[in-house]
Image 1 (spheres, protein in one colour):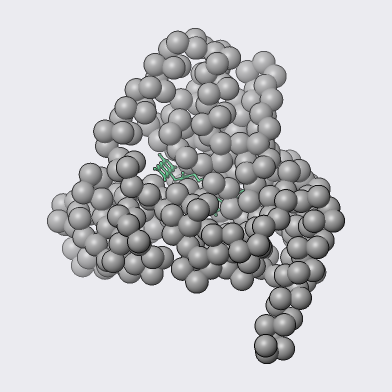
Image 2: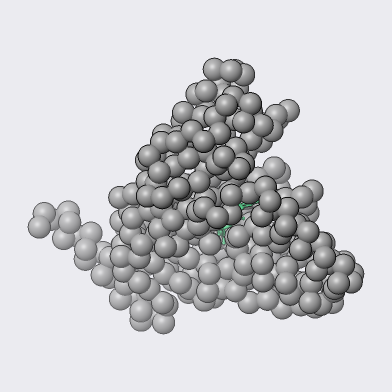
Length: 314
Ligand SMILES: Cc1cc2nc3c(=O)[nH]c(=O)nc-3n(C[C@H](O)[C@H](O)[C@H](O)COP(=O)(O)OP(=O)(O)OC[C@H]3O[C@@H](n4cnc5c(N)ncnc54)[C@H](O)[C@@H]3O)c2cc1C
């Protein structure tokens, strides 16, 4: 074994030991394909599942001390992971899934799924979150991406966010109004800090009416979206003045495939994994679509899907 490989193995073992000593669940060689909705990606050398802020800080500092890259992931539903895997540690937030309610304010951990938050709200007759039902992410991923659908955006509902400053390791709280929410972006997509929890505002409503709205949204998603295939949702952001899916459709690109990656026949905005797709297939297909749309309209559409390298903490 070369000296470099020996050093990398020693660093990984040291991080593993540090995390275990701090009662943090850690796994080796975790297949990322099993932890992303695209079902694509090789293995992560390490995967950590911290349960609280202190454990998150421990993961971050251990990786930094031993020179191992650390990538921040929620439910992996907007994510493309590399075929060759990741030689660092993926910090999954999914164990931080607490949800508490005080009046019409919901406080949820970064790893709470939007589905569980929406169902909690529905059962308590708290309205205003039904739009988010069916977005298969965590609260942390949703705030980072300012996830939205059917006329709503999570940013409009955020009272404040508590996060770990990834530079200083300090815990801070920032009001929603200072989170720089805009279409599919927020301060967390630009500053790689780690959202720990957020307070969400709702309105008092009626459980049956909220349930009906959620069922309607579910039916609309089933009808329009290729939910029967693995994907990461909309592949591209809207381009100002255009609906990207419509541009792709009108360009006759529905069904276009590279390897196992294909533009959905059902919804041109989705790239699906029709079986055995690699990360390289998806990236080539994204490039092909961008080029074709550029040729036709002289605009460059931007991917909404993030890659694991976008998630690496400083
Ligand atoms: C079938 C399907 C339908 C979808 N429909 C929609 C839709 O209607 N609207 C929509 O907006 N999106 C949609 N998506 C995309 C995706 O579900 C959302 O972007 C979701 O909010 C991502 O959450 P996640 O936890 O999976 O994040 P990940 O995919 O795990 O991560 C996304 C980004 O968030 C960052 N991140 C994750 N957790 C944290 C944290 N705690 N602190 C800071 N940053 C963090 C990651 O580093 C990464 O950059 C869909 C996806 C699928 C597969």
